[in-house]
Length: 132
Picture: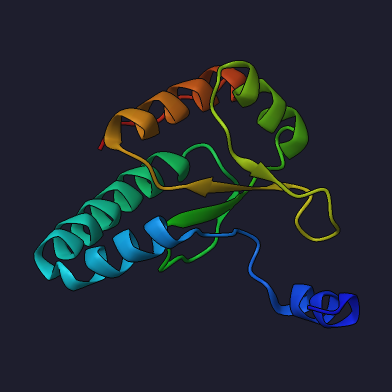
């Protein structure tokens, strides 16, 4: 295509490119409703588990109906928390932008991954998650 057309297309392009095989696999996955239902239930349960732990560690947790949680930390700079987690091979999203620079975007993972994250946050922040 002409360069000017490509430039316009990039304005609306999603951030990730998908080849034919992932598109076919994604379409097939969407038709397997039972597997999708089980995965949704797993994400919902894992998100609930994450939220229970974060209530003792973050100063604010924003409501989420998604596969991630946005949490605000004020007891320690979020960027420092993000770097300390990265040293432990735990990746979260840190946004160095106004209004989000004290927040971390935490994707929902498995219970094992969430337990590792919560344990690391306890250590980094010097707080304990009260077991309920």
